[in-house]
Length: 134
Image (tube, rainbow, N blue to C red; front, side, top):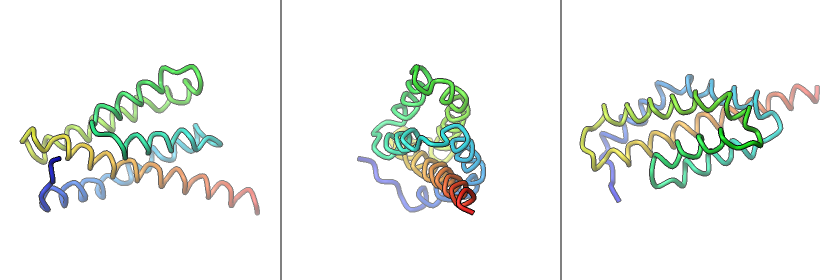
């Protein structure tokens, strides 16, 4: 297991903070597509947090896009998700060119990314529910 040094950890955290708004926009879109289906966003969160390879996250998204159930919703979001994941991959390469740390960097970036997406999704759902009770 590769352990990232403090400098790389700080750089990944800064990148996530700097791009938090962009990632949150995806969470808003999830809340529009999956209004009453938290399972989909939770599955994305689960795979991202448990993946041992960054490609597992990309493969999960592609798999969801190809399923008949909810395919149109995943297809509406899938390409944008994959673009953001590609940006995370590119950022990991900019942060450190050593191939040994690439996977750890990508996974750390992905986990920060998914926290931003999921938290915005849940915030939007809660906001919608509060509006429904007024």
